[in-house]
Image (cartoon, rainbow over all chains, first blue to last red):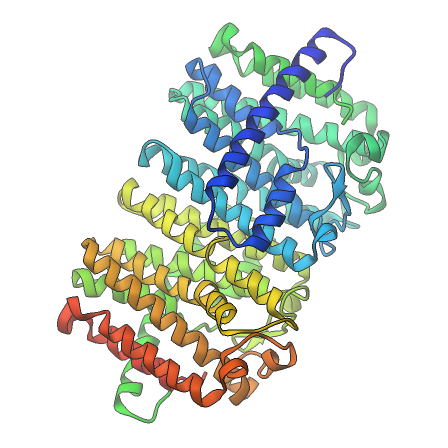
Length: 301
Length: 301
């Protein structure tokens, strides 16, 4: 996120704190998975320790806090699970047959640091581990299974994978607003919705609270992806910690390509406002999520 | 499996019937997953419809039958889930960066019929779908979560993925009996154990019944992999429905390479007998699993 004003600085600091917390949880889980193959452990550790922003996992923790007053241990496990799934998707996305990228989170991508086969298996391992920890570490079977279901739906072939598939299909092909919305909703927004939903489940949300957080997650997810697309054309690789300008070269279907940068920024602002509106049921308790929604507008990385 | 004697023919027919049943379950699930991305659906359907032997899913159904007298609906879902996970592992294993194969189950591999990116995402989709159906379709949350846990453990980085990783590491490197056992146990035997365990869970097995079936699954899984390695050096590609002679060319760590074909066949026989012994607690009820263990010795494909 960016500095420059008090809100930006405040949320930057809070996100940093949450990232620290998430890193701690991931380290605990890595330490407890003692039977993991040593080769896979090395690669899994490498990609999980890379300095990610941890926005999705922070969203799990904050959604739980907004609902129940505090982020409990279940939310910590759910946050780790979604971070694992997000990381697996990056590892596979970066493969030569996919986006063919060699820098991620400021360090060589998994297949560059190791090799392609290791990167394929590392992604597979992270995805499997995410479901394993949800099946083992959540307090009640009902909650554990609901989290597994939410994550599988939003990360699966009617969610994130659908978006990745459509993204590939769209390269060098027709790009229009309908396709763009399909890609963004599935590839990015559903994982943000998933994060908010998992936090809500862990906090014991009522139906209306759950629905509000899902709506919020979907909106900021869409806003986040538009910001990502704008940054790809306007920021440097060093700022981003990944290769800049790639979308244009790959003729990707993005908002700046379809609607231009100015209209994209306007749309981003609208989505942030809609996200904020979705939080009405929570009153002041949801201020942190309002800050997060507005901070996404000011991202510089 | 092979013909030639009554046992072989009997189990061939029974396995064929179970394969039909599993195919029917997979079709029902594909039809019910209506929101899947169309591109992913096409590839997922392609690989799931390929004529697999369905040994692992048959083992789920038979284990449940042995325990409870019949394969119930939960076992059908578990059978479909393990078939999806097995299929995902084949799709990823066949990728150019892994085993680089172009024939599987008698048809072009996924990345040959589509492309590499689609094959990566198809494997990811199948793995995610397996957990989704377990989270949605099993009668009780307790049983659903136990099945998720069993599958995630046995297919994950301390199970199947550990074996795949070690298999890659062993190529062109040192190959000894210890490494070989590690590879076979993890890469293959744990998924057979998983199948037997999932069937046991669905049948409501007691602890001693569950343990017996796990032991049985592990033993026939090891025997199955040795048979596979022997077939790779002795059978034709047409018989196998996949490329023969690949292990030797890739300098893979296999039993025939370490111990020779004669000793490998002897070991296969010993494992089948140990598998049969593990079934004592069930008496005659487990005859079908005894037949399966012995039939594995006579596989020709």
